[in-house]
Image (tube, rainbow, N blue to C red):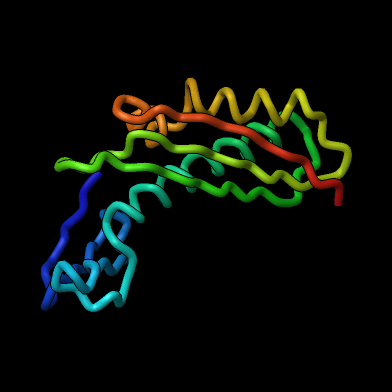
Length: 138
């Protein structure tokens, strides 16, 4: 996997991923940024949410569950001093579908957290991770 990050101006940066996609990042105004794009650590959190959501949907589909939607809301706390790593991250899953089995949803989230999601497993080395979920019948 590869990525290059190029400084634009002020505290704005553009990353080009190995798959050829561009992502813009910017700093907070108090750090010299112009608040034009997400902060780098926000993208780390978003990446963790995307990674685990991908797993949960894939696991549910493979388990022949009729999943029609999946959203994960993440809330995180960071250390007060540098490096300001994440110290706590909570994942709240909202899974939508027809006749979803609660045990299947719980198992999919657990498998992602413990076996498949490299992003959250990596973040779990410095942060306490917690998960909960709800099912919405569609």
